[in-house]
Amino acid sequence: MTKIFSGIVPVMLTPFTSDNKIDWDGLEHLTEWYIQYGVDTLFAVCQSSEMQALSLAERAELATRTVKLAAGRVPVIASGHISDNKEDQREELRTMAGTGINGLILVTNHLDPKNAGEETFRTGLNDALGWLPSELPLGLYECPAPYRRLLSDDEFKLCRDSGRFNVLKDVSCNLDILRRRVEMSGDSGFAVVNANAAIAAEAMRAGSLGFAGVFNNFHPDLYKWLYENCNLDSNLRRRLETFLALSGMAEPMGYPKLAKLFHKNLGTFASEHTRVIDFDIEERYWAAGALLDHITAGTESFRSEIAAFERERAVGSS
Image (cartoon, rainbow, N blue to C red; front, side):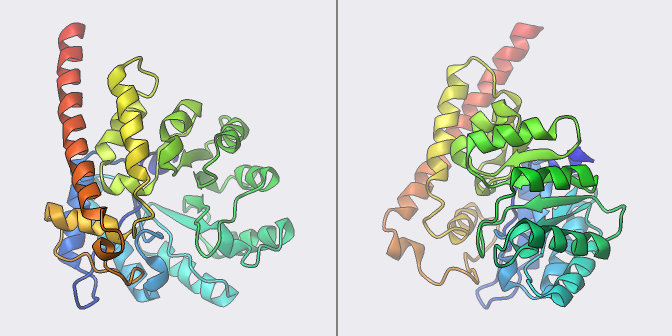
């Protein structure tokens, strides 16, 4: 089951029309874009999807439609876990579990809404597991909103030993923590997948089974090549690591609207409208448009270099 959750896992955007409705045609084009660029799994209904601003009916329909659009070509996982109230949690988790997704992702901060500690987390975890089908693959997500609730080592081991979880989307942004978690994971099948662009390459070399960060919305294929070649002694690999890390520094400039503007420029969908960013990016961050141009140009340049590198490598191995 680990393969359902590992590799290059984009946190999917939710395209909206300019009048604030979900753009279903845009979702279809976006799904095809992800698959075209080689992603391994689609993570729908997550923070990048603006799940906190979606109704439960919208979250469920978004997951259901994504499964249909993927059509078995790649697995689809989803969260939609946004509530603190137990009754609301039970309803939303059961609803999301019934959408046909390949795996359901629980958000750690909603298992311990007030950061009360391990006992509360254990209770929340046990409640959630009791509501869900035992055969449904599960994952955990240290979602930064409403607050970043990292697992302690004991909580990590608890989830590992439960036999119910296949992945932790690691948002520690800390290589020491990630390395320790990889070691604790061992051969249990409880994968650790990093979500931070700044440490992406080092995390892969440390045992992160892929990348699940927001910049998979810009160049997932580059992360995939890096993942497959993270130990390659190559100037291309080293320069790519630097480019990806620096590109990721643009995230504070109004993400996810920044990524939607990127896709609007590509023609994936027509509007950069979001429900969570209420300002014009290019007015607040006057260089945002120029930065996106640089990211786009750099992405295309590295795609060309990688294609040439792979052609040379194929000739050399023949």
